Length: 167
Image: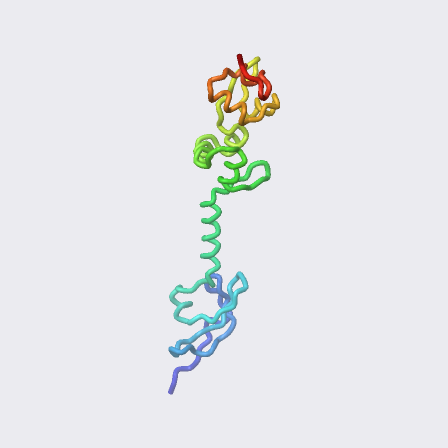
């Protein structure tokens, strides 16, 4: 006589699978079960896979791990309610993404975004970054940076208006 069909897995929860009912044997004459994953996916799973733990879910855990790794790999950073990738923040701050990454590692996201980890320039009792001086004076940041890079003092760079040359 043949073996009697057993359904001792029916109703059990194995990993994320919930075994619903016995299914017909597969092509290899192995017992199979209709299962539903906690994410809602329905599959027919061989009983030996349930028994030895080779199948505990439909693959949704793997997908979740891949997504989490992708987000981490993309270096997503949230500041003031805005979440951008490292490269998007770098483009917005006009910095190389490697520089921004180093500043975030060293100082944290708040300082790296707010201050950009940038050098401060003292003039007239104030100590501000080039970006802050540009906002205060109305001189474009590119112009101010170029002036500082070519050797202008901070006083010359912030007091002379755009297109005005030093003497």
